[in-house]
Image (cartoon, rainbow, N blue to C red; front, side, top):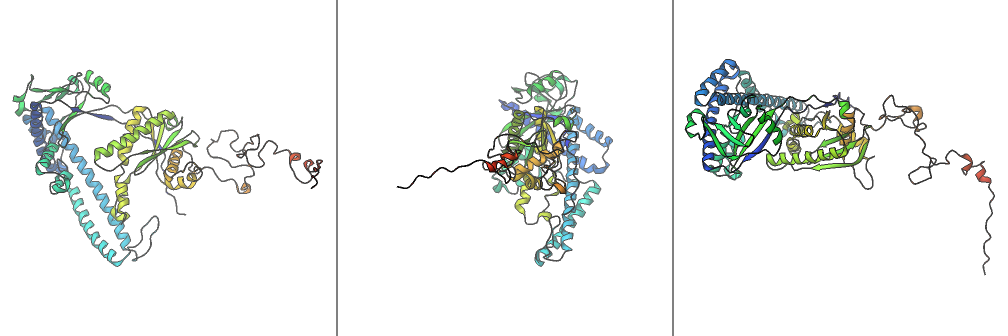
Length: 543
C-alpha cells in the first residue's frame, strides 16, 4: 500500500459577509423604459471607455490614475456615478487578472503531464497515481505536437501577465462568440443585438451610510418608490426635483424584505443594480448590502447534537445523520437535482436541494452539516483524464464552490453550522468499512451513502473505520473488541461487551441467553442434565 497523504483538520466555515436579493420591476410605463434604456446606454458607454483606460494603464495603475479617470467621468455623469463606474472597472480588471493566473496554472499542469507521459515508453501501463505512456506511436506523435502548442500558449500568457495585459469583453465572451453561430443559438441578428446591448448597459450604484435611505444615486424609499439620479446630459428627462426621475412602479422584496426595510429606515448603505433581461423582456432590481461576519462557532459546540454528513454527486446529495458517537442513525436521505440546462435552472435546482436538506436537518435537531472541502480546479485538465470526456464533463459540471457558498449562506439563516472536511479517501474508505454493514434486506446502501457516513465521522474527529483491531492475543474476540467511539475518560471503555440477560431469540446468539452461565442446564457430558430420569412411552401394538 502506498503512502497516504496527510489529512487537513476539519473546520467550521465562516458565515457570509453580505447578501443580495432581487425583485422584478413591474408595471413600468413606456416612458420609464425609455429613460432606463437611455441611462443604461449612456453609462455603459462611459464604462467601456473607462475599462479601456484601465487596461491601458496595466501594472502602472495607482490611486492617482484612478482619481484622474474619475475626474474625467464626473462632468459626463456625476461624482457618484463616476465612483461606481471606476470601482466596477477595477473589479472587472482584477477578476480577469485572477482568471489569467488560473489559465497559466492549467497550462503548466497540462505541459507537465504531457512531458511525463512522453518520457515513458509507448504502451507502458500506468498506476493509480500516475498515468503511463501513450498507447500508440500515433498518439505519442499527436501529443508531442500538442505540447508545442501548449508551450506557445503558455509563453504568450506569461508575457501578458508580466506586461499587465488582460483580455476582457464587456457583455461576455460567450455572447460575443454567439454572434457567429446565430442559427445554432436560435437567435436572429436583431435579438442578439438587443441582448448584447442590454448586457453592456451600466446602471448600478454603491450605497452610502448616513445618506437618505442608504443610497443617493438609486434611492428606494421604505414604501417602494424608486428614484434615479440622472446623469448630467440626461437631466432634461427628470420628473422630480434635483434632476431625479421617479419610476411609476413600486417594488417590494419577498426575501429578506424586513431586513432590507430596517437598513433603509436607518439610512444604512444598500447597493442597487437595475438589469434588463432581453430574453424575457423583464426589468429586475437587485439590492445588496454587507454586514459584519459573525464569529464562527467552535467545532465542539457545532457537533454537540450530532452531524449530518453530505456527499455531493453529479445528480444528488447523499446524506446520513450521525449521533454524537459517530454512529449512523435512521435511514439515509437523497436530495436529487438536475444540472442540465441553463445556469439559472442549475442554480435553482441546487437551491431547492439544499432547502430540502436544511428542512430535514432542522427536523432532526442537528446543528451541523459536514461537507467535503472540494476544489476540482486541478482535476479538469484534458491531459490528466485523456479520453474520459464524459468524466471531464461530469466534474466540470459539479458546482462545488457555488454549492458550499450557497449552503453556507442558507445554513447561516437557519442557525446551522457547516463543517468542511478533507475529501481524501472518503468514498473509498466509506465503501470499505460502512457500505456492507449498513446494507440490509430492505435497504441497499450505496457507495455515496457510505461516503456520507465517512464525511460525518471525519468531521467529528473519529476514524472512518468502525473499530480498532484487538491485540494479537485476543484475536478470537475473547474479551470483546474495543470501540473507538467512546472517549478516553469513559468508564468501561476498555472493558468487555456486556451480557444482556433474556430469553433466547433469533437475535441472541448461542451462549448469550439467561442460562448461559449455568453449567448444569447444559446438555454436556458429566452434567446433571444428562442423568435426569427418562422413560419412553409404550408404543401401541399393531392390530
